[in-house]
Image: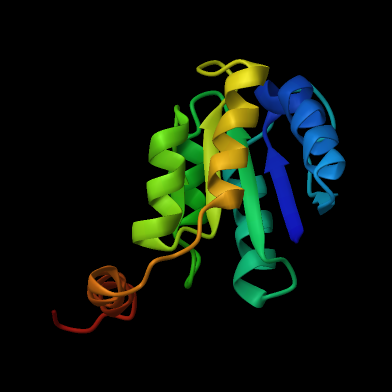
Amino acid sequence: MKIAIGGDHSSIELKKEIIKYLEELGHEVKDFGTYTSESVDYPIYGKKVADEVASGRYEGGVLICGTGIGISLAANKVKGIRAAVCSEPYSAKLSKQHNNSNIIAFGARVVGVDLAKMIVKEWLDAEYEGGRHARRVGLITKIENGEEI
């Protein structure tokens, strides 16, 4: 799988560990920044990763900021993105199975390396179930497109 990853200044060390882990699992990973611990604005990196995933150049994305919240909010402003903030593996799994999430986000100040790896692994291994969930994901898409639901 081709995976885009990005994060703000708080993510640097955790992002390095997650890139290494993803590559060990056999995934192709591209880091869209930031590359320094100097303070930066997380929406820039959330948008970069979201644009890559929405375009289809990457099959999924991983975003990391202090909590995962801000960067996921920015990513979710890009049409076609369903970024889920998860601080534990169960929600990560269900975000893919039920919501067809295409980006996973978490906080470098919230989860440690081992828990972050578990979150990523559950998300990667999960498959969208469709079925009753497809109607709901369709409603989310209608909202995104400014349509009535």
